[in-house]
Amino acid sequence: MNKQEVALLAEEVEMLMQERASLLKVAGVAAALISHANAQDLPREVVEDAERLSEALNALREETLKDALEAVHGEVE
Image (cartoon, rainbow, N blue to C red; front, top):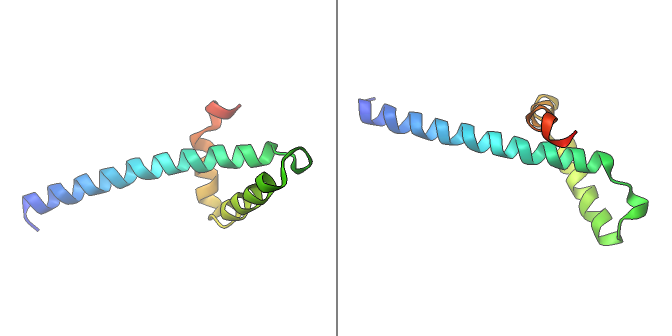
């Protein structure tokens, strides 16, 4: 690889790292929201969406979910 290719690859990796950080925050806030939600207090449509969100969060690797919760730890408490 030449210097220009290395530089482009480094920029792409940095962009992906920033995107991952943003997605971890979204997942962390979503997990916090779901953990505090009470299905009895929500409209049926919202409960269905919350169930889908919960399933998506549960499909994450445990390490990823921990990273997500840590990403928003100070923001959601």
